[in-house]
Image 1 (cartoon, rainbow, N blue to C red):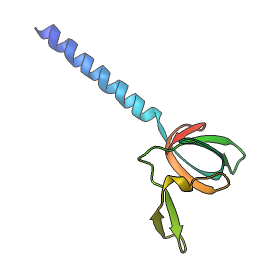
Image 2: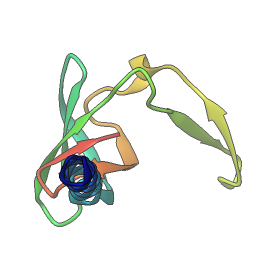
Image 3: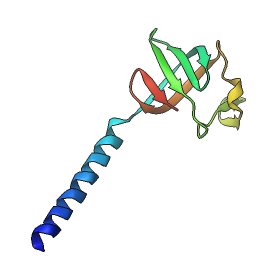
Amino acid sequence: MTSRRICISVSLLAVCLLSLGTALAADKVKGKGVITLRSGNTLTVETDDDASISVIVTPDTKVQHPIGLGARKKQVGQEVLIPGLKLKFEGTGDQNQVTA
């Protein structure tokens, strides 16, 4: 009975560590650049340092437009994300792909 409890405890600990590792692997990424291509929910953005990054837009993604000096922001639809638009983005992922 005691060995079974130890086995269950070790299994739960392993699951917790794996889920923590997965959460830490998806780092916060911020950047800015110009949309060069839009294909469905994926934007290809050329950043200021001439790197190309894929930004995935989900239904939970907030798209905001600055008003005035930029202190206030207005929610807009995802249809405004067109090639040629300058944008700032933040999300989780790595330096090649970000989920906004």
